Picture 1 (cartoon, helix red, strand yellow):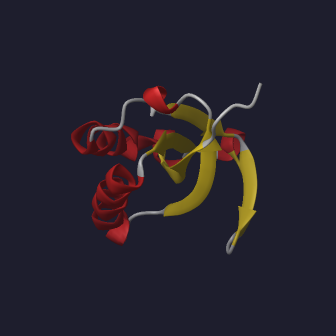
Picture 2 (picture 1 turned 30 degrees about the vertical axis):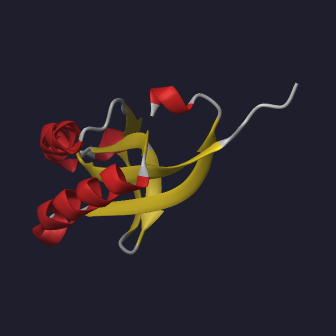
Length: 105
């Protein structure tokens, strides 16, 4: 049996935790049907290494919001997130992925 693969876009949005609800609202407004929020525990960036445990408050904590969606919805999400991150810390990546259950995305 051969399963058909359907092209979609995966968006990973790394942001400060206080922005999470605004990003989720943008996903909802774009019609994205699902997402997952993951805590960012540690990493390294332009300013060196960091650890979630070292954050003084929630503003210093990062989360990653991940969604998989159709290209037209991805464009709406990216436009909204781009406006949101104009003056905020954040990294957004977009990847081409294939899914086997197209009706879920």
